[in-house]
Length: 451
Image 1 (spheres, one colour):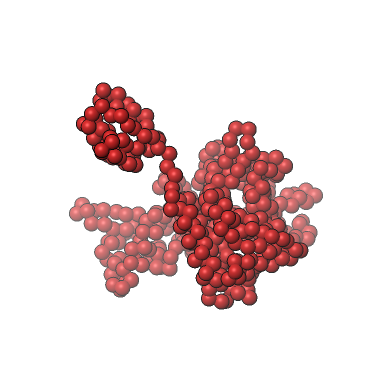
Image 2 (image 1 turned 135 degrees about the vertical axis):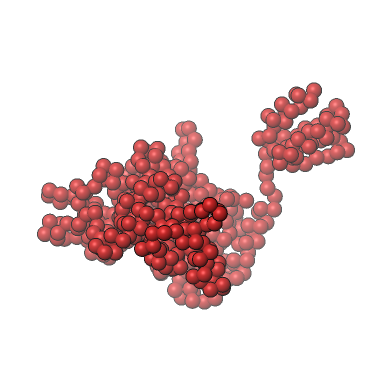
C-alpha cells in the first residue's frame, strides 16, 4: 500500500514543533504574537485574551469551570493548543497540582500591541517611486502562472535540473520528498511527488514551505528567522510594493526563492528594487480551511467513465494524464476516459483511489458540482474496487531458510525471528521458514552462534 503524505494544516503546526527556546525567540516580535493569536481556535483565543492581564498562575481545575460540561472536549483542545504554542506554560506546585501561566514574552508584547498598536517592520514604497504597479487581477494571474510553471516542471522532472530558473535551495527542497535521482539518471517524481500534484494549491503551498523551512539549517539559515519572516510577510498588504533594501541577506535570499513560486513579484526601478506580495504570500498564516479558494471546477465525469475537462491549461492536461487516458485535446476541451490500465499506472506511482476521487470532486465543473454526488457513484466505487483488487497481493523481499540439522535449532530460529517481528512464514513439518530480507544478516549471525 502506498503511504499517504501528511501536510501541516497551517503554518502554526510548524511553529508548534519548534523547541521551546526557539519559540520564545519568535515571541520577541509583536507580529508573530498576533499571528499566533489569530490562528488559535475560538475558545483558546478567548482564554488567551482572558489571561492577558493576569500575572499569577490559574489552577487547571478552576479553568475547567469556565465552560459547561458539554464543552469539556473543546476546552481540552483549546488548552492543548495553547500549551503546544507555549502561549500557556504549565506550572506545578508542591502538591503537584497543575496551573497555567501565560508566557511572559507573549503577554508583554500583546499588552503593548493592544495599547500602542502595531506597525509593519517596513512601509510600502510611495506610488511616486514605483509608478504603475500590477493590478490585483494581474498579480493573481502572475501567481497562478508561476505556480503552474513550477508544477509543470515537476511533472517533466527530467528537465528540472537543466533549463530551469530554480535556485539550488529550491532544488534541495524538491529533492527532499518530491524528486529522487540516481547517479547519472534524470530526477524522477517520488510517490509523494505524484500525490502532491493532486493536492489543492494551499495544501501544496504548506508542503513546500514546510520542506523549505526544514532544509534551512542545511543552507546555514536559522529556521526561526525564516519562520518569523514568512509570518511577517503574511501581514504585508496585497499588491503594495516594499523595498528590497529593508531586508537582511537571509530575507533577500528567501524573497528570491519565493518569487520563483509566485508568492511575490520582483520589480526593478531606476534606483530601487522592490517586491510585491501576492495572495499566496498573504495567506501564509491562515489555515487550509480559511484560505481554501472557491475556484471554478472544470471536470465532468460521466457514468460510462468518459471524462471531459473544459480547460485551456496544459497543467490540467498533464495532471489528468496521471490517472486517466487522454484521447484528444481541443483548444478549450480535454477528452479522456478513466480505465483500469490508467488507474493501475496511477496506483503504481503511489496515488491512492481516495486522492483521485477527491481531485475529481474538488474540480467538478459548476454544471455538475451542485449534484449529489458530483462524480457518479459507479465510477467512484469502481476506482476503489480496482485499487482493492491491485492491493490484494503485496510483494515483500524475503529470505528462505531450510535444511536445519535439528528441530530444536529450527524452533529457536523461529522464536528469534518472531520476537523481532520479521518472521513471514514457517513450515514446522519440513523445517522451513521465511524472514524479511533486511533481517537476513542478523539471522545468519544468530545461526552462526547456535552452531
